[in-house]
Length: 254
Length: 255
Image 1 (cartoon, rainbow over the protein chains, first blue to last red):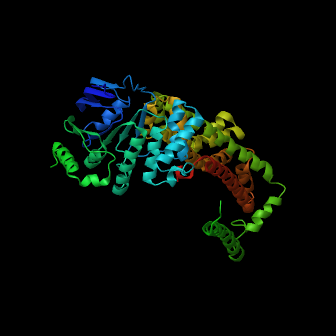
Image 2 (image 1 turned 120 degrees about the vertical axis):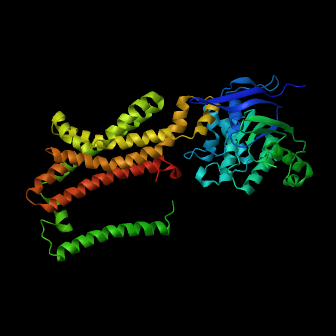
Image 3 (image 1 turned 180 degrees about the horizontal axis):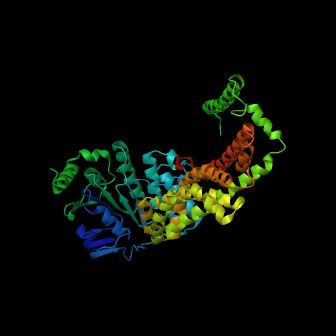
């Protein structure tokens, strides 16, 4: 067996709020191979966002092991993480291109190459010609695409997405799902995708890790054996229905 | 930029209302048999500009320097102090409540004290103008610097960005609309502060001039002084708005 790109074993995290202790994650264990797109799905408060922040190096944890990177795919925590959030969080005072360049500025990457790369990425997410627009001139979906380009501009090995399409309308969301799959297949990044959309989790993921809340715990780790490239037809297939039903059952929503 | 018909219409109507006010003033005084010491006509008011004894230019320059000086000091001090809060949470938690309390002190009530401490002249009036517009600038700037999306901080921290990078790339540009919003409020207050200072005690300036001509019921002179004070305020406000247009992206402005 090859070494996994991400190895998470027995991770536990508690928050203290005054006297009370609040369990955010208990005993999360799963592996992610390089180049996988893993969905973390579950209700609010199940610890999926906390786990994402642990992967980003923003939170520590109380017990367990988190290891990212292999000899083949070394991981530098200071420059190999790209993040996308529910809100695009573009800087209002910067044009789209300058927004995409933010991570490379922070990392001090050479300007000319970064600009070229940012333009390529904007073209890849369908925003060619919008480089000099301000965020307010873009629709919500376009802003989120720019945010995805920003997450890729420093060529990170791991992209962490926290409900990136949660604020979009249903149709735009489906469209963005397809585009994310295309971006993923072209960029060959490892993506960890947090969502509470079960169908979205199955549709995108090579694997779906299911979390339940109250108490927070990891309920299952399901490999999704559906071929890529995936199209929206897939959602009507029996196997797709089987996976989503299984997850609904795990979340007690049958 | 192309000037649209709508823009022309808006500016036209705005100008029209100003002209109309002056017209009503003129007609009302002229045909309403209002005594000149109660209300002079616009023409009589403007005619005072030719008067020898007013020293309009000198007095206007004095008042303007008090306003601009006090205001400039307030912007520099207010913005710098607010910035220092972003570096030390403890300083902010300790100093902020004090500043909020001090903000409640009616600054014009300090006027007589300032004059006791610093005597008559441009500087004490500058200080009064400063004290009255300092707090709104400080408080809005501090608020703007604090108003950062926590996830944006996560993004920068995930790249191990420094505090300085967060400040220069996120906090400061993000706070600019707030700074300008405070500066606009402050611009209006600074004018009031300087004039109150001149009323309380001074030997030069438009406020001082108003008290002088009041004695002789020279209402036209007082009107002219008020108009000039207003124009100084308009000039200051215009400079601030111009800078805002130049620096702050349209959508980011605080309305």
